[in-house]
Each structure stands twice: as structure tokens, then as C-alpha cells.
Image (cartoon, rainbow over all chains, first blue to last red; front, side, top):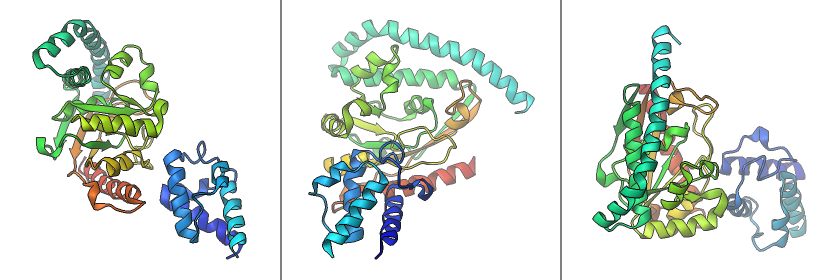
Length: 84
Length: 253
């Protein structure tokens, strides 16, 4: 899976899970202000990403530093590389 | 808008707004005497009494609107709003909350955003009724306070969309009420409302005569949903039920 495929999977997974408009899924979108994801959604987001990419990330400190969609893209891309 | 509707709307606005203000003032003046009297007569706790008073206030509002708004209830029997329950309803208008006086029970705490708590003529009564200010206390605080209300045989009402819909279509649902249902085991009672978006939608201040329908769906037990995404599955299931019912209600007019 290349980086673009990872980004596409993240976007479609989150859009489907949180009923978001795929057109709003731009890299600079702030999770809280632009996508309307609240604190509970952030917990659910970790679960759906774990399922989509078959890894465990809920204990990672870096998760708390995620504010934008591009932060998620970068985090998952780095995590996938780390596991390869 | 045809001439008949225009005249009816003019009369409605000239009559209804002053009547609502007068009814609100009457309620405020009645409260210092009615509240202790009710407590002596019933022995109820303060929040329970206040919720009942809010329900009576809402019944008065229904009476004021009755010449201009045709209210209809569907799917209601007392047994369908088992207390304690978590009621979830779609959100179209500021006056959706007033329409909750159509419910056959009064012991319901509303969970809402912060801005209604900034209306000084309502805020003290909302606090006395233990309404939950979601933005102020967050989900963790809402779960704690909500669990306490449910354990004391009260019900909770949520607008899972968070905001009024600007186009009348159902919006994205937040997971909070469904997570609370999974944690407490309280059933979700989906409510569907139509017509209040014609009565008073967001960004309009004047009323239009309308037909308002409030439909209660069968309670959904959270026990049928398991696993770490149980609340998400419950949310999707309930939203699906509500979407289908709202489509049917709108098609019937």
C-alpha cells in the first residue's frame, strides 16, 4: 500500500464512520473545528484506524498530538513504515 | 406565500409572541408560590418538580400555538416512554424543546448546548431542573450527571445532531447519548419531529402556521449491541430508523 492509498483509506474510513462529507476531508482540516469531531469521536477514530490498518495505536503518546487530518495521514504512514 | 397564509402568519405573530411573553411572566410570578406548595403536596425533589413545571409551561405554549399549528402525536402510549430512558430527537427549530410538552411524561432532563443557559428568564429554572450543559461539563460530566438522573428514575433528552438542521435534512449524529445508553443499559427512545422547520427554522424570527408531528419509535435496547464499537453500531441503527421514519412522515405531509 503506497502513501496515497493509505491517505485514501483513512479518508474514506473516517468519512464513513463519522458521516463526514468526503469533500471536506482536506489535509488541513482541523478535526474539532472543521470536521466537528469531539472527544468521543477521537477515541472512536483510534478504534476504526486500528481496524482499518490492523495495528494497535491506542497507547501511543503521539495520538494526543493529532489536530488535523494531515496529522493522521502522517501518523499512519509513519506507523505503517515502522511496522514494515 | 399566498394571501391567506400571509394574513394567518400576521395574526399568528401579533398574537403568539405577546401571549408567550405573558405566559412566561405568569410562570415566573407563579414559581415562588407554586414550587414550595408542590413540594409539600407531592414530596417530590426540586429537580423533579421543576421538570414538571417546565412541562406545564410547554403545555401552555401548545395551547397558545393551537389556533395556528396543528399538533399530531404518533406511536405514543405511556409504556413506550419507559422511565428511565434516553430520548433522542432530530433538531429543526428552537421550539422543538417546547414540543416536548407533547410527551406523556414530564420527568425529563434536557441535555443541551450552553447558549440556552444564557437566557436569564429561563436559565435559573433550567439549572433547578438539572438540565445538562454539554459544552460546560463535557461528555465525562454528562455521563456522570446523566447516570445520576437515570438512577433516580428520570429520563434524558438529547439532540444527537448537536445543531438545528438548516435544510430540514437529518445531520450527522454524535455518539454521546448512545455511549451513555451502552454504559447504563437505559433504552434509547427515538423521537422524530416534522413541521417545526416551517414554524420557526434557524435564521428566521417570525412564525408561520404549520403542521407539527411528533412520532415515538419503539425503544431500542442497548443490550443487543456488544463490543468496543457497540455505541457506534447503536448510533447507526437508531439514525437509520429515524431517517426512514422522517422520510415517511414528510411524504405523508
